[in-house]
Image 1 (cartoon, rainbow, N blue to C red):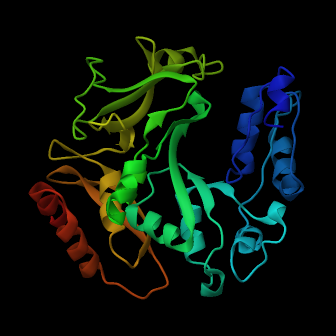
Image 2: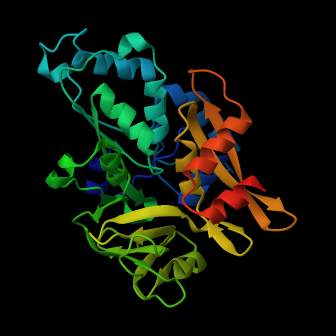
Length: 338
């Protein structure tokens, strides 16, 4: 479907499996699609979505499969010494998943974490994968490539193309490099990080932040039936992604945050992504999300939500101590403890 629908001159509009019936119905109505494909697992929610549509509305195309860890491990187990690799067609070589799915694998039963006889290459995106997560997955025998993209750029737009000389670096430094978004794919004419007000490029110092902008043949023409949003998304021929990032001296781009997710505390910008990466340094934290919360003095302050892994309990005080230890600047240490 991914290839045949465009070849037929139509547009394929995948719908997220996590959406409820109301949101699916909204997408169906807005897209004015002709055909609605539904995997058998999603017939119940698809039926509800259809009933919510107004009379005369048309269908949509939907190609969905849920994330099934048990089935995934059944397939990947062929790469382990506990399985069999006699059938090369049965051995998993590549897979795509979000960092949250990588965490699910890490929480799987220890019996499944045998020594792998062959590498599994993983393409991951959605959010920057934390360094500890990358290290743990590679210990299991996975080789991870990080990508960055958005619907407006037809999915993946940047990849962290690995350099052979990086193989000589310490493992933690290699993991930090893999967390970068890297370089553009062939269909992009150019990528840059610019000051949104002046549209000047930021210095290639890995520190100065700006908005990630893209242009090329894989960029959308505009939003369906939303001229205002289309005009606001393009500037001087560039697609404004809404993501904040930096450019390193080697020209690799690294995302720092979504523009709307930057926390402004006491007039200073705080990257929620950077704080999440600090939280991941604690061995008991499996998942972390940092958002802004109101503060009477500073306007906003960081608020963290964490999910603990199965290694044991941890106190709030211990998490604060870990954050203070790993904060990069004195300013962060002061604000976090307020």
